[in-house]
Each structure stands twice: as structure tokens, then as C-alpha cells.
Image (tube, each protein chain N blue to C red):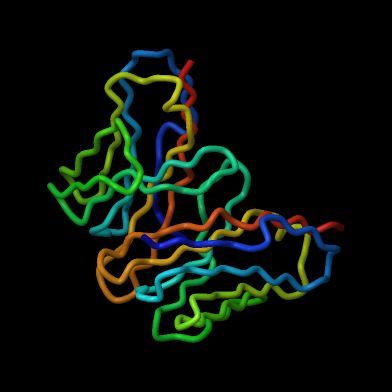
Length: 113
Length: 112
């Protein structure tokens, strides 16, 4: 059982608010990822990190930002939420070594009114 | 850019029938391939991972094959049950940077 946590699970917020989606893992994994998934659509990578103080933008352009100050923590921030940010956000992690299997958190469903 | 395609997009079968889900990818330079299950509104559960050097992996009623040279993988689910109803996602990991590229998924309904 993968130990990766996301909070909140659901968030309804007004336009213009700043939000932070939390993601934590207890597996000591060095790599962490954020994906965005609209209902019925594919997952798209928006940010990833290969270690502390390392962050990169993914394949899908996003107005969000991320930080990686601690190995276990990879929060995602939206400075000013807009209705176009309404989506499901999924966090994942994978470890060092040969296998590199990705494990996912339960997701945060964000609705911006 | 890696493109991953899953066929069919949806599948409905009676309980007990075997399921065959297909995944194809355009760039054979992959590190590994993962099959995931996603229930509505939930995260992804990893089902099977096949390394690029492997031909297949098995876990219980699930068996996944990989033909890297032709860019194809197949997930077999034996003796389907209503609890198998979910969306199944195929994802390939790039050889250079380990990033996953996902297919759109196959939504499976197993009728009791």
C-alpha cells in the first residue's frame, strides 16, 4: 500500500483566492509529480521534482507553482484561482532504483466559482 | 513526443467473461510500462509494471504483456467480476527522464 497523502480532498473556492494543495509521502521517494485531469480526460503532467530544491515544469502549461523544500512534501500553489483551474489534481511519487514505479495519492478535486 | 493510445475506449461484458485491453505507443524507447486502475473521482492504483526488458507480468487474475518493438501492450483480466468495473489506464515511462505518458483509458463495465 502506497503512503501518499493529499489534502484537501475537495475544495470549492471563489475566483481570485490563493490556494495551496498539499501532497506528502512517507516512502522516502526522491521523485514527485503533479498531474491535472479534467473529467473523462487524460492525465497531464504539470510539475515534477527529482529531489529537494529541484522542480521542473511538465508537458502541460500551468499557472500553478510548486516547491520542494523537504523530500516528503511537494505542495502546489495557485496565486489567484480562476474557473479555468477547475479540475482534479493528482500527486504521485517514485523512488530511486531500477523499478521507478509511480504511486498516486487520492487526488484533490478543485472547483473555482 | 510519446503518444499512447488505448482501444477500446469503453467495454461492457457479462460477469465471468475475460477482458482484453489494448495499449499502443509510438516511441519504443521506453523505460517501463505501467497499468493503473482508476475508480470514479479517485486516484490511480498501480496494477502491474513491466520493465522494458520483460515480456509479461502477472498478478492474480491480471496478466500484462509487452511487445516493445511493435509498441504494444495488452492487459488480460480473467473471469471478470462486477468489482472490476473501472477505468484502466496505460502509461509508458520515458527512457530519458522517467516521466509517464498516459493513454485516455478504457472504461470497463462488468454486468452481474
